Length: 103
Image (cartoon, rainbow, N blue to C red):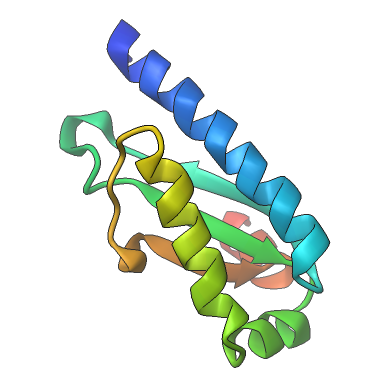
């Protein structure tokens, strides 16, 4: 990872930490979020994954207007550091599903 990539990654982590703190207080069942990126194809390769505690809470969240609000918050926070992403670069998962994918 180049020095400039590390700088951008640190900025991304800082704004996503802010989003995480807000989401923990605002959205029932929200647990954490993470990001994946390939800096050779940045920012198109940036993926933000929001994880909920259970499939039930994830499904409830996905069926509500809050889904759109969280995605837009992520976009807005990233834009504050001049990183533009498409709403399709934000995805949602549950702990159960996420853990199954890791094994």
